[in-house]
Image (cartoon, rainbow, N blue to C red; front, top):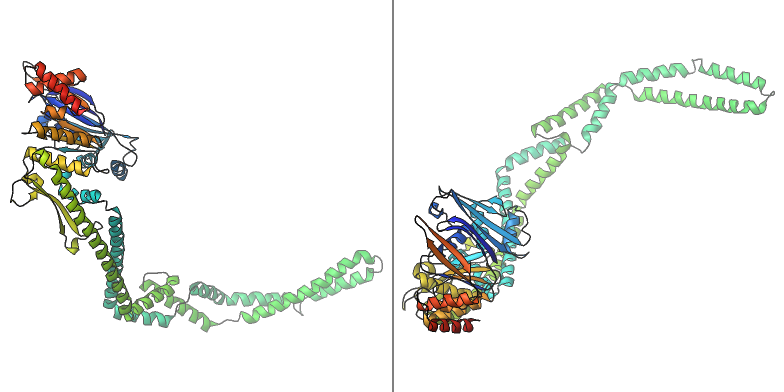
Amino acid sequence: MLTGLSIRNIVLIEALDLSFGAGLTALTGETGAGKSILLDSLGLALGGRSDARFVRRGAGRASVAASFEIGARHPAGGLLAEHGLDGHDGELILRRVLGTDGRSKAFVNDQPVSVGLLRSIGARLAEIHGQFDQTGLLDSATHRQVLDSFGGHRPDLEAVAGAWAKLTAAREALDRAERDAEEARRDEDYLRHVHRELSDLAPVAGEEETLAAERARLANSGKLIEAAQEAVEAIGPDSRADEALAAAERALEKAAALAPDLLEPAVAALDRARIELNEVYGAAIDLAAQAEAEPARLEAVDDRLAALRDAARKHRCDVAQLPLLLDRIAQRLASIEDGSGALAGLRRQAEEATMAYRSAARALSKSRRAAAGALDTAVAHELPPLRLDRARFVTKVSDLDEHRASAGGLDRVAFEVATTPGAEPGPIGRIASGGELARIMLALKVVLAQDDGPGTAVFDEVDSGVGGATAAAVGERLARLGARAQVLVVTHSPQVAARARQHWRVTRTDRDDSAVASVSLLDKDERQEEIARMLSGAAVTDAARAAATALMATGS
């Protein structure tokens, strides 16, 4: 809901701050007082087209800020989050600053944004229905969503969106498989050549590390043999080690009778030393035997390592990756040989997904056509009281080519109108005149009463060229719409103004070299006087005041 509008140096307005409430608000005043400037200013804040002529003469720049109160789940909040803008805490302030060169800057909650983003956010907050407006309900891109909201098509839309997601996934999987198969077919000769080479090489996981360790042992076999031989000579039968152990044993035996308890551990240790010395001797003998030089094996290991590393360089990978490469190539060759079966399965899945999508889209189309008929009937019921009894509103639902299918289905929806009998319906904005257009939009808004649409609707020229019962019908419908949404109307009709919950009067004061517009909120007595002026003209009579009182009583 629009809660405030702050305007600085826009044409006739020097400085103006307005506060708005819920329901229907009327803006009245003499022709040329500046009512349209208020709408132009709001349009600027919502992202409308700027023009240097908006800047008040003598001012360096102009600005306008519109404040909105929105709920936590308002669509504008999602758009803010999508573009990384800070949280709104229930309030959004759209601001536009315009220079004398016609250039402008846009802000949302004092954060700079593009005018395009400002326009997108503004479209979710308010709609301005006027003679030259081509947004909101006049934008055909919104008509399908509006019809779906009117028809309550959420379950059908979710079914179509789900079917579309599955169809998209199935088509992408098939496309990938077909590309892979085609690429594999192009590379088949090369793949078979590489597969033969790697199969002949037969790389094994962890082989490089095993071979490297073996090569190190083989390359150092001479040193190992020399060390083993030295050990054998040092502790072998011809060494003095046995003599030393025997001498020690004899010495201990001589003294054993003197202190057997003290010498027993030493004798036991001497026995263990002899056993372990024999074990070392045996191990050295085995080492000397096993470390025998094997030049042929060393050459074979070198050749194998070289072959593995050459293959890795050729295929730009590590030796450890060669077995994986062989497996992948084998799988690609298998896919070529068995590709027809796999592709046939993916094609079948894509066809099934296509049929499921078409079925869901057809069900949605049927619902849309039924809703279109109901919408046309409801709008037709609203038109005669608005002096549009010769007009015909048509919701056209047409089939889209399947290549233009989307998660939204296979339909194009357009609101069209014919204002003369026998004429073919056409786009609303091209067929209807300014006053007709505003009244058609009013009828459509009253019927739709969208819960998920913009919470503020602004009408200009809605009562153009009508009076009496027609003006009363316009006022009654505006009030009805105001019970469900915030409505602002610029009006010359006392029947419309009398229905308002809030009434602002725009006045103009001419100076020697300029003019200034001002706006005032009217109390009950001031409203009576303003509506009486609208009824009788410049000279307000008692009869006009009585008529104004009667109108206000009807509208209350």
